[in-house]
Image (cartoon, rainbow over all chains, first blue to last red; front, side, top):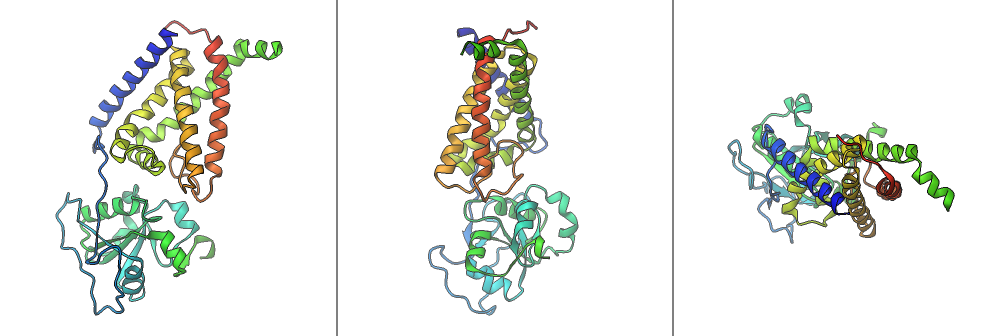
Length: 185
Length: 150
């Protein structure tokens, strides 16, 4: 029994060595320690979103950030801000950061799909969106990171008005706001 | 019972089980090796491991899967590989069960990430059943495999 356990330990050590080496040789090495994507809300506390009833109460927009900037480079919007201030007023573009199959099953009406891990494959869609366009990105809900990852990516690409709709698809769906799916289009 | 034991001892049966599970583990590891961040995200979704450690696990675990699978296929240190594979299968079964128990709406993260709809727990159930079958298949391999000397 001792020998198989030693073999197992050997395999694990080998895996650790290969894992570390391959990561170090990656073009963009993955951080050894995962960092949470911190977001702050757009000028309002998370607990009590105020009722904002028109465009005359503009959202606090983040300044244009430099390349490589990560935290605080984008801000979050609540369901009401996303719907009343941006969606209804046609103030911005909605981008669904989830995988294509989830987008196809259902998404915010009018939203385009750019899966967070495949931005480079969707450059055609991005080409239609000017860098100063207000963009709202979302994924499933508060627990997903896809929207934040995509937001970072878009900021790196030069977009200056990126908002993350934290409540995402789940909140939008629960609120009964306009949705569409590939099956119905 | 004796008949079952005879089947389990059968060289062809042991080899088939080795190849099936080994190839599956190699296959399952490939996407995770290429996309560690996606896999880290899948691990995070289970909410079982402190967030900070998920990247590290996502960078190493797929290589353990790959090497254990490869060694099983090659019949090189098969018993060591089986110990690791059984350990991983047990951990996966516990993680998947706890996800179902907690009603988490997540991807399994077992093979290629994000392949199907995480709206139902079917994917998780299928993975649990598959892992239990694999565990069963590993018993004769652990008991009766005769390693090649490389």
